Length: 424
Ligand code: COA
Image 1 (cartoon, rainbow, N blue to C red):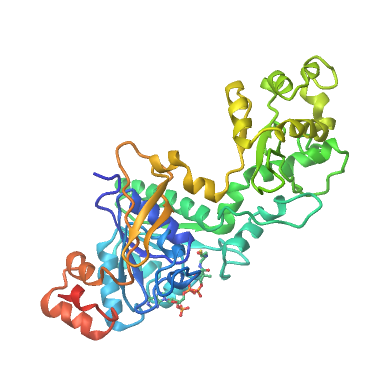
Image 2 (cartoon, rainbow, N blue to C red):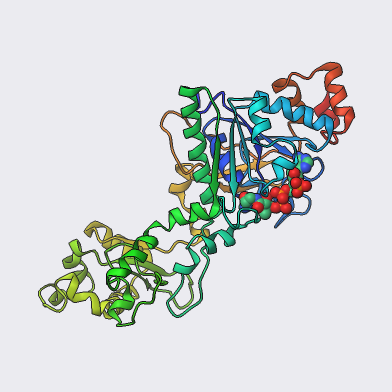
């Protein structure tokens, strides 16, 4: 049995944020029924395609373990089917632009009228306030949630990150809100609204930067390398390059092969507890006793020189050799792994974090499996559905339309074109 077995989700999500959330819930065992516009579907099916006329990796990698039904929810018969779905499901998840669900006639009041136990979960760009009506994409959230202003180098522009903290990050927040509401429903019998705003999700992930904003009122942020370099702080938390966010100085340094390999680097942390080992490894044992280097406060104005010295050593080793030497000494460090290296890493295949999936139209492809492992709820990643692949199955098995009633729904055109073999 799976953790969320028996939970039915009416999945109105599209693009990345919402689908990330419902994919996680599907992996935990929920029956996720993705509702898509007939003939069109989730816009990402056709975006960034690598193979003509085949669902893109953008879509397939965010929609595993789901069923797909096509339904025109603006059509009268479509609305009838949607009402049945609302009554039948436990959770509705959506990330439409603000107001779209109300315009469809399925706002919170109507949903509660149809099914008081329904949990209605939404991703929006912003919470209530001046920007609540805006459409929002990943980088807008990174910029408005505090990530871009604190990412990049001090002398460069604000920078967005490769990690999709606005979309996927908010989807993960929403999933937590949903299971929490589900738990509360066990006690109250009532559903509730769950909102995860992308700005809020990004800000939550940038929590330490708001910490630093307040610390600034009491003096310079000494662990930022700009402090050691004597560069004055302004009014807001600055961009800190590759400084570590914690109290232990860290930086990215070059390794053997950096001249040709853009990822021949390692993140190296000069943790105070292992300073002696760091000095021995980089060939500076005299720094252990030298009052200019022995204690962390004395080192602060020499951080740049210390990392230059560390780099002179790491440049003689590959990033994996650095890891092999430093790990047994408890010196925290991490090789910069490329996507190619991650895709080929055997241990990630073994744990199911990287999974190979077979798709009837595209063949085999790699995806990121479930990043959270439950010992009593195993995850088997299955391919994403083709557009409308489960329309007839959901209409009959979940909603009980059979015979003439099923024919009426199909004939109305509300569920789009049904492939002959599926209708039989
Ligand atoms: N049948 C009929 N109509 C449908 C439908 C269906 N099955 N599914 C969707 N639609 C309609 C919606 O009702 C809406 O119509 P309306 O504008 O007339 O009310 C329309 O399709 C488009 O929905 P919308 O959400 O506005 O799509 P968009 O492509 O214009 O905007 C986003 C995309 C992502 C910008 C927007 O959805 C958004 O801001 N979402 C919230 C934040 C978010 O999640 N952003 C990150 C995405 S990764």
